[in-house]
Amino acid sequence: MIANPPFQWSMLHPRFWLVWLAIALAWLTSWLPYSWLMAIGRALGRLSFKLLKSRRKIAKRNLELCFPEMDEATRNDLLTKNAEETGCAAIETMIAWWWPDWRFKKYSSFLGYEHLQNAIADGKGVLLLSPHMLHLEASGRIFGLNHPSVGFYRPHNNPVMEYFMVRGRNRGNKYMIGKRDVKALIHALNNQEVCFYLPDQDYGRNRSLFVPFFAVPDAATTTGTLLFAKAANCVVVPIYSRRLPNQQGYQVEILPPFDNFPSGDDQADVIRINQWVEQAVTQHPEQYMWVHRRFKTRPDPDAPSLY
Image 1 (cartoon, one colour):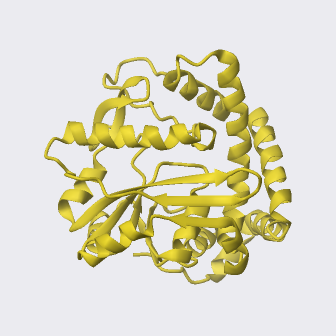
Image 2 (cartoon, rainbow, N blue to C red; image 1 turned 30 degrees about the vertical axis):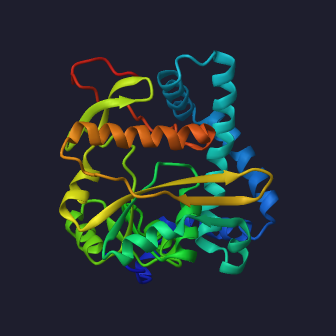
Image 3 (cartoon, helix red, strand yellow; image 1 turned 90 degrees about the horizontal axis):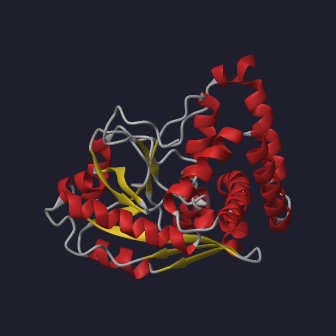
């Protein structure tokens, strides 16, 4: 369990000065009007895809693999929109970490809260499934405003970034759990906490099954969801989240819990999770994190990379 980390004087070492400068500039920028921030984000995203060509190449390849039926012009348009959304995600981190509640509430919408309330009333914890949408930081803050929850995350190697990241994500929420601390997450679920879990990235061969994801027939997919669902007294609840058009902000929608889950058939259950992720992503494919090498692990380790 990771609560807000204390400040350490060692974080003022000169090797961290550039990080402090970047954070100070980001904090000052965050006070600009929301419409300005999104315009800056879109421009930043377009620039980053031009400069970081490897990331652009990964996103383009993922779109080719997942949507082979899509014509090239449409895919290129989607890629451009995804670049803009990726830049907005960087700006949204500042918004989610630093905006006061009164300002953030104007741009947030929260639907389906009764599904959490029902699970907790039944004495259950909630394993909250969320795909890697680009506005995750904003989604987490919305949850903090409505139901303080627990995050499952990868700690940052830089102590200054770790300090601000944990404190920012805990703003309104309870605490964070490192991704390797499986027992702590199970303990939180058994204590009826609502815990975020993201099941849609390639975490390697360990505890994974190769099942379809979009048009790729054999995507390495974690069985971590099943591990927690089996070990803890909890229900598995999916959510949809979206960045709304016309500078309206963000909407998080909680859906009913998965029924008969886990079913006892791990293969079928993992396929079901991927199908749900597909449904979430296809609502707003431009808002998904396509820059991740989702298909880097192949069933045959000697097979050529899809990238």
